[in-house]
Amino acid sequence: MYLLGFNCYVFNSAACLLKDGELIAAAQEERFTREKNTGEFPTHAIAYCLQEAGITIDDVDHACFHWRPFHQFHRRIGLIVRYLPDSVRYWGSHSSRWSHMVRAESALREAFPGKNGRSKFAFHRVKHHVCHASSAFLVSPFEEAAILTLDGSGEMAATTFGIGKGSDVQLIREIFYPNSLGYLYVSLTHYLGFTPDRDEYKVMGLAPYGTPDLVKDFEDVLRATDDGGYQVNLDYFNYQRGIRTPWVSQKFVDRFGPVRQQGEPLLQRHKDLAFALQHAVEEVILHLARHAHRITGMKNLCLAGGVALNSVTNGRLLRESPFEHIFVQPAANDAGTGIGSAAYTYHKTLGYPRHFAMQHALYGPAYSQDACLAALHNANAAGHALKWQELSEDDLVQKTAELLADGKIVGWFQGRMELGPRALGQRSILADPRRAEMKDILNSRVKHREAFRPFAPSVLEEHASEYFECDVPSNNMLYVFPVRADKQDVIPAVTHVDGTARVQTVNREQQPLYWKLIRAFGDKTGVPVLINTSLNVMGEPIICAPPEAVNALVTTGLDYLAMGNLLVSK
Image (cartoon, rainbow, N blue to C red; front, side):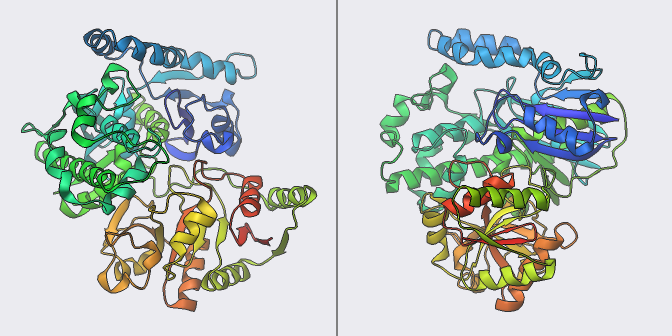
C-alpha cells in the first residue's frame, strides 16, 4: 500500500511516500525549484517520490494533506471581526492561500491525472497540528510519549499538548493563534532586520552576543502562565491585525527602540534583544515541557513544529526537562507535515500497527556518476576549466582528508539528499575546525553571509562525549551542547561565542562514507571532528543536483568538490 503525503501553500512545500507504513522517499520542493522555503504546489517533489519508488500516481492508494481549511474557521472569522478594519488586509493577503487549501485535492489530480485521467487514490485532510504531532510520534522509537507541537499557527492552533500510544495520537490541549511562539519569533526576526519566516535561525545565532540587560523588560512581552501555558502580550505586536510592516507595534518601538532595517549595523541593543527573546522562549518551552510531563506522566517527549528547530532550546530540554528521552522530527517545520499526514492516515485512520522508526533524514534523491560527469562536461563546455579524478572510495576518503587537514575547503556531494533544514554530510561544505580563522573564511569567501553566524561540527558518534557535553546521539543536528572546556581551543572554528556548538554525531551504520572521512581526518590530525555547513550560499536552498554543486565550485571560494567518487578542482 502506498500513501503520498504532501504540504503546500504556506512554507516549506514537500512530499513524501510511505510503502506499507515505511517512509521510502521525501523531499522539499525548494530543492528542485531553487526558491527557498517555497509554498508552491510540490510538483517536483511528488514526481521525485513516485520515481524513487518506481511507481505512478495510479499506484498510490491514499493521498494525505496537512490542512483542514474549515477547521476552527469560526475562530479565524472572529479574529478578523475583532481587529476590523486593519484585519481586512489580513483576509486579503490570506484568502488566496485559503482557497488553494480548499482545492488541494483538485490540484493534485490535475497535476497527476493518472492513466485514465482520474487517479484512484482516496484523499485525506488531516489537521495541521495533528500532522506535526504524528510526524514526531508515529516515526519515533517510542511506544508511548508526550507530544509538544510549536509553530506559528495551523488552522488556528499555535501550540498543542498531545499523547501518543501505540498507533494512536491524541491532542489534549491547544493554545490558539495569535498567542503564538512562532509569530513572536518571526516578529522579532523582522524587527531585528532579517527576513521573517526564513531567518529565525540567525536570531538564535545572534543571541549569544547579547547580555541579559533586557531580560526583565521582555517579561512583559512573553510570560509563562500558572496553567502550564504562556501568554504573548499582543499590545506589542501588529501581526494579529494583518499588519506586516512592521510586525511589532508602536508600543514595542517606544520601549525597545526603532526597527532595524536590513543592512544597518547590528547594535548592542539588537544583540541584547535577541538574547532576551531566546531566553524567554527557552524558559517558556521548558515550562510547557514540565507541564506536559505532569499531565501525561510519560518519560518520553516528541517535538515538532517550526519552533522545535530551535536547537538551543532542544539542548536545554535534554539537560533540564523531566523527560528521559526526546525525539525531534528532523523536518520539524511544515516540510515534515506530509510525513505526519500519511503516517496518521496509515496508523490511525486505516488502523495498521507501527513497525517503522525514522532513524535518519536521508530520503531525497541521489545521482549517478553519469549525471555527475555530464554536469562537469557541460561546465567545461561553458568555458570553465575543471579537472577531476575518478578515485576508489578509500582513495577519495584519504585524499579528501588530506586536503581538509591542509586547510582546503571541500564541497561534499554524496548519496541521498537530506530532508529538513540541516546539511548532514550528504550536501555539505567541509573544513578544518582546528583553524580559528576558518569561520571567517567560510562566512566571507564561500557562504557570503553575516560574520556572527556560527558553524556546526560533525563528530564521530563514539568520540562525541570527548569533545562535547553530549551523552545522546544527535545525528540530525537538532541539539546544541556545550563544548568541553579543554576542547574549545582545539576546535575553535565550531565553538560559538558562548562555548556551545550545534552537534551532529555521525553513525557508522547510517552514513558509512561520511564516517570514514571523519575517521581519516581524525587519524591524520588527532581530531575526529569536521566543520559541516550546508552546500549553498546565503539565501539559496541546500543544493540538490550535480549542476548546482558544480556551479557552487566555480562561483564560490570552494577549493574542491567531492561528487560521488569524483574529486574535482578548478
